[in-house]
Length: 82
Image (cartoon, rainbow, N blue to C red):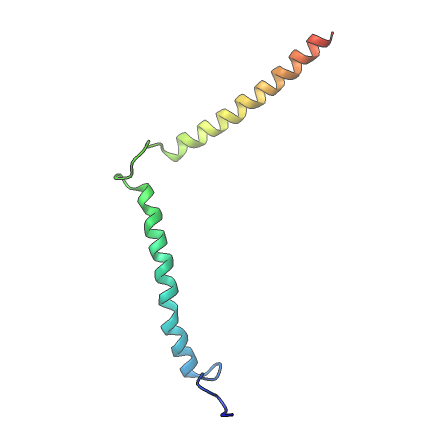
């Protein structure tokens, strides 16, 4: 058995250079996925254009509406029992 084999020793300059060569391949895949996600936020994307503020207000309004319905249901149930 040869010492060191085909792989450079950990911490050596050759190992560092090898890691530098491997990193861009993984980063390129992540960059490509991010490019596809940005497609949803362009003006060319199909569908309804709603700003994030409108979505937030509609969500809070829906939660409030459901809470009011729950309270009304409890009150209706209590009056019906009496």
